Image (cartoon, rainbow, N blue to C red; front, side, top):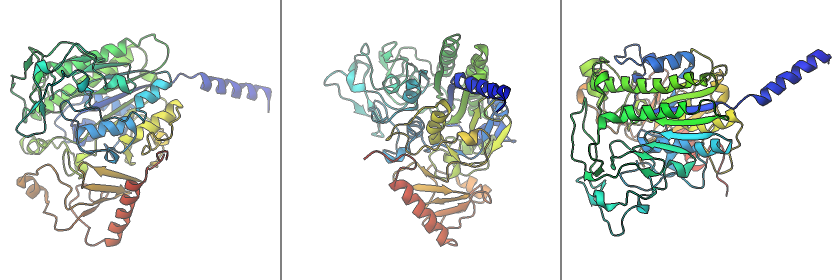
Amino acid sequence: MKPLLLLALLATAATAATKPLPNVVILYADDMGWGDLGAQNPDSKIPTPNLDRLAAEGTRFTNAHSSSGVCTPSRYALLHGRYHWRKFHGIVNSFDPPILDAQRLTLAELLKDKGYRTACVGKWHLGWDWEAIRHPGAQPATDGKKRNKVYAPGDFDWSKTLPGGPLSHGFDFYFGDDVPNFPPYAWIENDRIQTPPTEPLNITPKTAEGSWEARPGPMVAGWDFYAVVPRLAERAEEWVRAQRGREGPFFLYAPFNSPHAPIVPSAEFTGTSKAGGFGDFMTQTDAAAGRILRALEEIGEADNTLVIFSADNGAEHYAYERVRAFGHRSSGPFRGVKRDLWEGGHRVPFVVRWPGVVPAGRVSDALISQIDLFATIATAVGAEIPAGSAEDSHDQLALLRGGETSARASLVHNTNANSYAVRQGDWVLIDAPTGGVSKVPAWFDEANGYTKNDQPGELYHLREDPGQKRNRFAELPDKVAELRAELQRIRSNGEVRPLAP
């Protein structure tokens, strides 16, 4: 080899070896449908300029899925790289204990071990150890639905450290109000309640769309639901700016509480969309994401940051009336909404930007799941995943870099304990009498050509039938049997890294 060529190769290797690890930022919307991203929906009535720009500067994945059709399970799956249904199905309710697994790494713990500074700002919804601050003998009442523990403000010692939250699972910093429509209605910073709640929830503001949905329980005097999104955006922005000039990489997980109900857009965003209150709240969510993205630019870290934007599940059932009132389809061309096994319940926006690594302006229809973020980020930063963690996560870095083929051949969809669906290639089998959970208005089914299923399951070819209108369950029994076998295989075994015996 010629000396000059050898020197050039050695210089290239040295540069690669000293290249800094990328920062990682995950922006996670709450109850945002596939069609609520403007870049994805040519008929959208909701402007999302910041997210549209992110999509133009990165790759937009149109066949991306959350693990569940509801909040907590999708967050568990994202942070653990594991199907939620291997452990549970429902959400963490008010004052429930932590749901994350101590014996498995979270994404934050993985990155912290690589020297990352880690922060979570926003909706946690994965439980806390409330028993550590509950006064002995304090007992809750239950609300009419018997699902919520209704405590009085005096049932807790709010001055104590509150364990079990983000700081117990790899995050150096947390700021948020846990779940904005669950008590306690108070700000939590790290593991402390900032201001003690002194009164029960006693306000019912007028919402811009849908139901109020705030559950009863302790509240800080003067709590303002309209101020939650702006405050979370401000604190996330502040945390990013505080990283200016600091050595080493950082990880920010920013799970927004919007556009989840209660739908309470600030006055400055009222009327900014043509899709009513939800549209305005979605525009405000886009603006919150924009503040974080601009902060990355201002500190000079945008080019060395892997940014991922997605949502925990599809839009709430109010989306049906939005079609009739405004002509906006939150689920885009897909059937179903939040909770459903149909595509609209779990096919979500998914945008990735990493300048110089992820191609700009690209659109991919390759199958990808939020569960895959764990293994993909681990590879991107050179982290080793120990046995027993992230067993369902697939390394999709090659796909992010511009590859055409997904590392994932199949994917299981689930919200409830007894209803599963499995995706393989363009086929999806709903192994239940219906993919619907949320009630569908009769007018919507009639207007869109949907009829009641008379088969024990549903089978669709999504490339030919993205709206899931032609059920082929009865005509293709061999395909049904094949997909059922695949579903059983996945449910019986970890996909990538089986748990250690």
